[in-house]
Length: 184
Image (tube, rainbow, N blue to C red; front, side, top):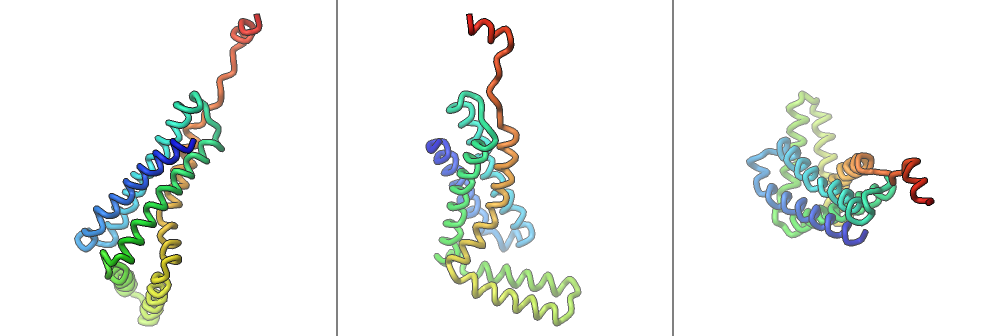
């Protein structure tokens, strides 16, 4: 089980990291709204390895059968490895100053969205204060990592649940004729 989880988890993690590193430099051109779509599409693509990992474990190790619980265990462990890669990549980007003004640009974009929605000056001021507090929290690497972890993990959890449900397969019970032949 370890080999399958590590193999597919590492591949998924490398894909998520590569896609993040490949798209982040273009965020100014893509825009934050489309960037979110591109980012989550990359996350979903990297989590396709959860499905293939569970299937590989079922077919190559367990002889074609797997319970929902075992499939879920394999899938969630692959998801966790991939999420660790995602978080580590973001921490390097953020704290390594590869994109030092990204979060400020993102929060400014959020405040502009509130302004453009016709919100009152009080609501805009509240959103501005909220984003300033967020930026202070975000400077803490542990809080930063926690916020970053909750981006891909729910997607991986859903992919894991769906994959475990789709791929579970009970052992075939012998037909009455096979059972008689086996006893004689």
